[in-house]
Amino acid sequence: MNRTRTNDRFARTRNGSIDSGRGGSRFGSSAPRRSGGPSRSGGYGRRPAAVQGEFALPRTITPALPAVERFADLDMPGELLAALGSEGVTVPFPIQAATLPNSLAGRDVLGRGRTGSGKTLAFGLALLARTAGQRAEARQPLGLVLVPTRELAQQVTDALAPYARSVKLRLATVVGGMPIGRQVSALRGGAEVVVATPGRLKDLIDRGACRLDQVSVTVLDEADQMADMGFMPQVTALLDQVRPEGQRMLFSATLDRNVDLLVRRYLSDPVVHSVDPSAGAVTTMEHHVLHVQGADKHTATTEIAARDGRVIMFLDTKHAVDRLTEHLLNSGVRAAALHGGKSQPQRTRTLTQFKTGHVNVLVATNVAARGIHVDDLDLVVNVDPPTDHKDYLHRGGRTARAGESGSVVTLVTPNQRRGMTRLMATAGIVPQTTQVHAGEAALHRITGAQAPSGIPVVITAPVVERPKKRGATSRGRRRPASARRAPVRQFAAGAAA
Image 1 (spheres, rainbow, N blue to C red):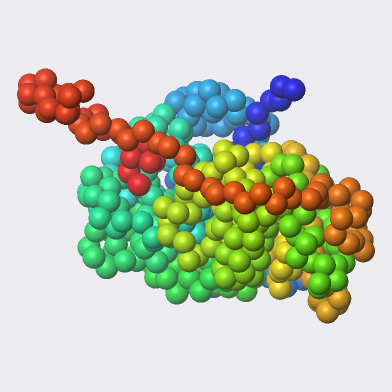
Image 2: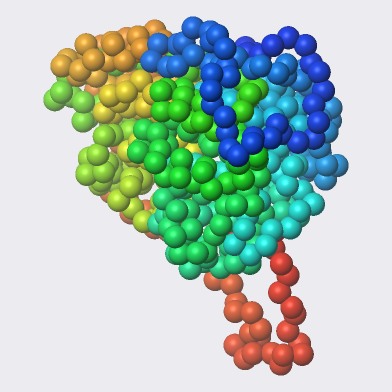
């Protein structure tokens, strides 16, 4: 069945609204300037009531520009609009429709939305449009996107790459776990936009390989997770180095006290947009709590993994992930492990195998809870229930994306029931609760569980043809210098990464 392609690979929602003043006066082309740095002396006035566990959203002082209905209604370079059209993207999601008119005009933005709400293009198009036509000097990027994980950095880079190419902007991806020398070379060659994790970017700055004093547009994506992972001191140190009068955009699925610190210190009269409360559930997602007995849980997990179709299974520790993956492979299930103990090339290869269907089951820790998009993934299983409602929401956010339906299943043993009830209440979710046993019809009906083949499998990496070295002939001899073609400067994200 043919479907109109949705933009940014994210699920559509209709209940977004701008929490701002009324009206829509036009703004100039640059952001309000900050004299000597951001001022944070009580500029927000009264705040609306906060969601449980969060701070209240600030009210926008200056009226926001009205939302648009089409990307064509935005004041963006024609090349970007053409790239959107070639990607089949014509109708913005609510968070994009609301924030882009203002971020394109230079306003600071505070956006809250669950995973899958369209945040990447919401900040990415504004960043690229406002940077287009400029050329970065060596080691001095003009735009910066800070993200908490390597996977999210790569997803942001991949999502923005075609649009960056259209306006001839160079992207560099700066993350840990990858050769730092290549990243130094990319920055030395000049990159207008850097997508980075805080730790690696700090390392490069300390080495003298990067400076942030020319960065005029800064984005914090998944700010809440950066706070949860202990990156806040690094994030604030980096934000203190960018141009103080520059534009800042902060996007987060939840807004806790640590994020409130960033908002008050670094955002000036931001346009505020909330797609939905962080506790809100995706309407196309089903939530199931399956009560299992401890002795039966292992068998039930194996049968769920043996279903037809892909599934992500979350566990608490990397050792548990490795043990379950080995068991599933020995049971005839094509599974692969993903956790922080894997090198970045291993993690990238595993994700590629899962996305292409080379493996059917991704067994992972919370490292896979954000920044991973897989088409047609209709089931997420919490083999180990999460301890935090935010982890639950982000794990579940790997399914029911791009308007599709999906299910989140949590296996709960008797001693975990009380804690799971509290977690669901905090998350604002009323799940379907079912008592199940391995091999029963109820488990099959909810998850598609079936008996595994029992024939051990070995997952091998797909064969990739290695490119020939530049200047080599088919017989391995180098061509004369006069016959060699000059290298073409690439503007793709991957070339700079």
